[in-house]
Amino acid sequence: MNSRITAAALAVTALCALTACEGTGTSSASSKPSTVASDTSRPSAVPSATASADSDKDTGKAETAALPDMTGKGLQSAQDQAQAAGFYALTSHDASGRDRMQLFDRNWKVCSQSPGAGEHPTDTTVDFAAVKLEETCPSKDQGAKPEAAGSTMPDFKGKSVNVARKALDSSTSITVKDVSGQDRFILIESNWQVCTQKPAPGTRLDGQPVTLNAVKFGETC
Image (tube, rainbow, N blue to C red):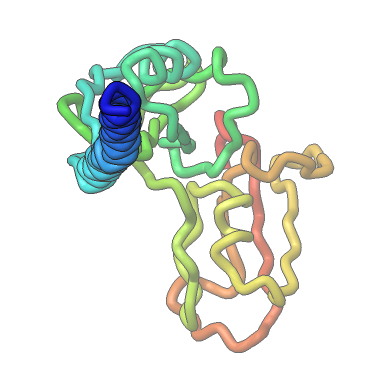
């Protein structure tokens, strides 16, 4: 009788010990998610650092580079060298003031540039003042665009017919005559220079017709 009680007591004791071990295991396993949750919070610092880098990039200074002196170079070569230096916003104009288009860059040479040589932001627009290869650069750049005439007739003598036309109001009636005696038809007005005009310089402009008497550049009026 006593042996049976002893055996039962031992079985109960073993069962309690087994149950206690399983409970401990379950409790230990249930604590793991808190560690995982703590680990998953760490990557949140990465987006913050990326956003900070992007912000620094956005607010940083504009990139600069050294723009070479292109004076005397062919227009095409000047443009290529400017791009090689990091400048891609390029333009050019007729330094003679005749307002000609630079259709074939290799046929033109650089007289001056704006801005000049030196360190500049690479997004700066570089403007080359140029003339044709066989021409002499003027002592002063005559500008990229003709000035508007306004209410008074300018003095167009020596200027291209093209410049005179662009300076006058677009509603102005303009007649252009070849006064060389050859009675030629005037096709490319930037190749013709004004010899005389009507009305005279200084006359108030009030819608009256304008007559420009011209010859080709290189000819005598």
